[in-house]
Length: 499
Image (cartoon, rainbow, N blue to C red; front, side, top):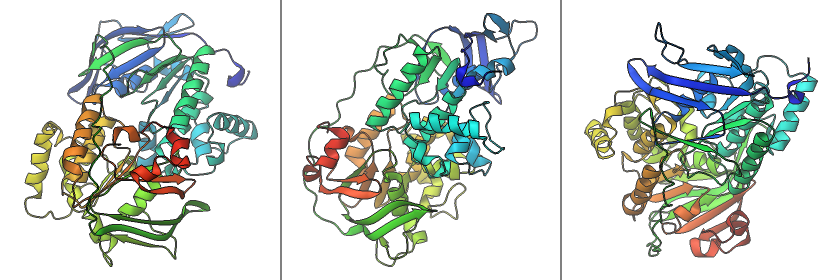
């Protein structure tokens, strides 16, 4: 039998007729009727059911079956129909952030090579030594996604963008007829975005059928794509692309310099044999808004983890958080954090109310004894954000975007003087991206708070930023007031003149 990379992709069509998916007694998808015969772009707000629809397409979950009625989902493999996904799954691959959560919940720490290798047969885990032939395929695919230098590293050490490329490499290794990519642009910098778009277009030219989801506007793929919109778990007519929001353009007044709330002196961070940050010196004050930028893997998330007390500096470095001599445990109660790397640390059975309340203690999940009024404050915030109906649900029942909202509420519920946001707009639908921009401009940035935001999209926050820090390979390439940094070469290498 020939190896998969040299096999022709068999034609695969998926047909839905009144398909329904339920989570317990709650309907997630209902009345889904359409046929996947061409490239598909799935739109929808947070919680609309996009990831669930991808998992239904992939055969990971089953639709509700009704006795005496025709199957709600049928796969046609080279024209032959089957209601069972078992044969079809050999020709389907799904790339979704949910896969990393599954690995984390099982306590595994696979390497990037092992994650990619598991895509050969579409397994969740790879439990055998990688053969020389498979290792060559893995290395070739990783090189195609420009992550071959990361193969020995644990997947848990990667940035969001590097993880997204790893998941795509895993999916591509199986040479699927149907390629499903959830939040295809998640965490990608501008260079990686162009690379992934080119690879997806090449896969389509080679016979793969693409199904993509994203909260961003439909991308400029050189492909004819059918657009489907999900609204509250049901199909709706595809809407016209929303005009891109014009974020506020007025520059903030230079803030009066408040007390130092974050000070790094000669800081380095190592993980195993890898040096993630080196020779960092940085001082930031209350009233300032810092944008931290850099390519995927430059060290942005590591820097925020260090500031939040989730990582510790290599001996010889010193980190001041909020006040000299304050312990990490005490500082965590006064720091707000929104970041994708928090998600795997939560117990999936944690209730939304517990997750929000945990912001008061800096713990994860079920909170320690709360200060007076904490429960009422959390409930009031949930009411303002119109997420009260989630409070008694486990976080595992939420979509990616819904969980990001919960973590944002957790980050701000205790009115922290230091607020750290790692790619805050990722995973949010258009309406909440606009709402978050307004929150940042009118409420979250104020003279008594230091706001630090890691982002690949500085144009959304240019009117808010007072300072910028550019990271390259774990080192500071440019740092200082916004007007001084943005004309410099390191900034222009990343963004050109787009600020």
